[in-house]
Amino acid sequence: MDAQDKIRETVTSNPVVLYMKGSPQFPMCGFSASATQMLKACGVDKPFTVDVLQDADIRQGIKEYANWPTIPQLYVDGEFVGGADIMREMYQSGELQQILGTAK
Image (cartoon, rainbow, N blue to C red; front, side):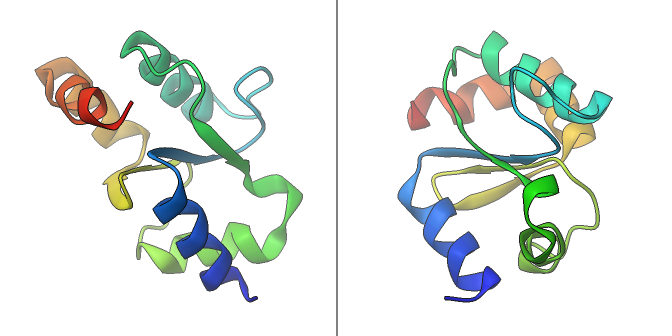
């Protein structure tokens, strides 16, 4: 199974998936920390997370999968939502809470 197949399998098998640097307990960048904090604030205590620093193929593959150049990346119900900046805008408008409310 190549990286694209692994990514597709992960995002379609889990309601909330965050590709990030590090883990929710030990994020390795500020954007990943911010993304996990927003998810927690929305009531998502245990999103499925993938540490892209552990696998170079996944790290590059996730950028190609959504045609999005940065990490973190959030997927809800198999759909790409966005990175940390998009998440922040959606959180501030209440849209992120609505999307995540259906995926828990």
